Length: 68
Figure 1 (cartoon, helix red, strand yellow):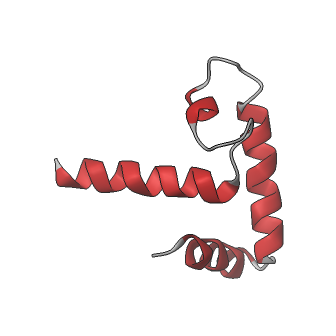
Figure 2: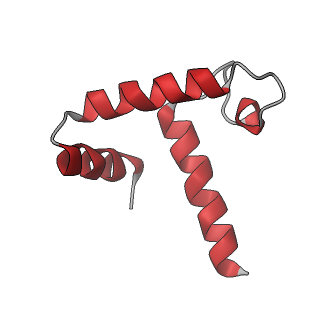
Figure 3: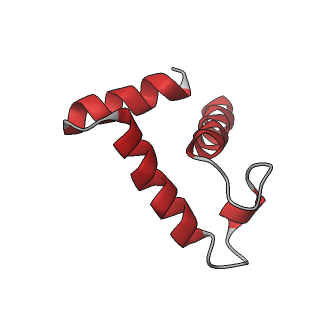
């Protein structure tokens, strides 16, 4: 499943737009990044990871866990 499919699915399940899903995820990411020692700060290319970068990271971690 691709990132956009996941965001669309979440939006559809909750009766909101895909943009609203991403905005809410961005708020959560920003809150998590307030702790300079939080692992989320190591995700992505910028100072604060995008929802897409976080989702890609999560999907990679799930795939690794399923391989073990």
